[in-house]
Each structure stands twice: as structure tokens, then as C-alpha cells.
Image 1 (cartoon, protein in one colour):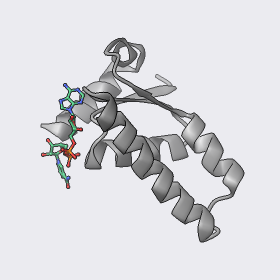
Image 2 (cartoon, helix red, strand yellow; image 1 turned 120 degrees about the vertical axis):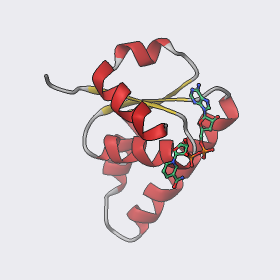
Image 3 (cartoon, helix red, strand yellow; image 1 turned 135 degrees about the vertical axis):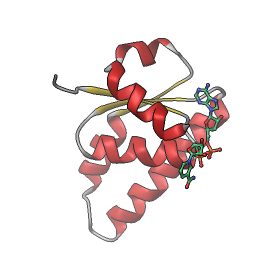
Image 4 (cartoon, protein in one colour; image 1 turned 90 degrees about the vertical axis):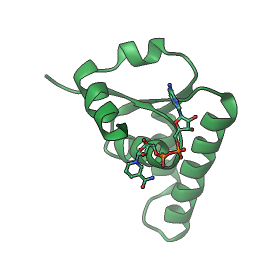
Length: 96
Ligand SMILES: NC(=O)c1ccc[n+]([C@@H]2O[C@H](COP(=O)([O-])OP(=O)(O)OC[C@H]3O[C@@H](n4cnc5c(N)ncnc54)[C@H](O)[C@@H]3O)[C@@H](O)[C@H]2O)c1
């Protein structure tokens, strides 16, 4: 089974880091949390991390924009259903 999309439940410390790594690996990512302020916080952390990498020359500005473009912050549980379920379950196990 080819993985095309990943859903990360939780945009906190672990969640935004996992979302960033998955997007950097080329996957489309839905990062879901329960309140807008949490998904905003997760996206801000990812942007800060990628900006730092760009400033150090580790990635280009174009790569940074492409990575950010693959991450969709959401409050919608339906996004989870669109993802490959076994992968979601694997991530859930990491949370437990
Ligand atoms: N931080 C670590 O080093 C670490 C290491 C190993 C395991 N863990 C585990 O990973 C999990 C997350 O840790 P963290 O440090 O990212 O915590 P965190 O508090 O930074 O983030 C957790 C996020 O999950 C969100 N959340 C809660 N219920 C949700 C739901 N139903 N759907 C979607 N999002 C929901 C919260 O709003 C919060 O933003 C915890 O269970 C923790 O024990 C953390």
C-alpha cells in the first residue's frame, strides 16, 4: 500500500514535529487539533523551525514554501478518515 497522505492528531510538541518531518519527506499532511489556537501554534512552530533551516542554508525558501504547502491545519475529524488508516493508528499508538 502506497502512503500518500498522513493525518497527525494533535499539533503540540510531538504533533507539529511529526507533521513537519512527514511533509519534508513529501507526504501530504493533515494536522488536526481540537482548537484553532492549537493548530495555529503548531503551524507557527513549524514555520519557525523551517525559517531557521532556511537561514542556515539547509533548505531553500522554495523548499520551505513547498513543505508548508503540504501541511493542512484542520479542526475537522473527516480529514482523519481521508488518511491511510493504518498509518493513523500507528501514530495514535505513539500518543498512547
Ligand atoms: N513530548 C514528548 O517528548 C513525548 C514523548 C513521547 C510521547 N509523548 C506523548 O505524545 C503525546 C503528545 O505529547 P506532546 O508533548 O505533543 O503534548 P502537547 O500537550 O504538546 O500536545 C498535545 C496536543 O494534542 C491535542 N489534542 C488533545 N486531544 C485531541 C484530539 N482528540 N484530537 C486532536 N488533538 C488533540 C491538544 O490540544 C494538544 O495541542 C502525549 O500522549 C505524550 O505523552 C510525548
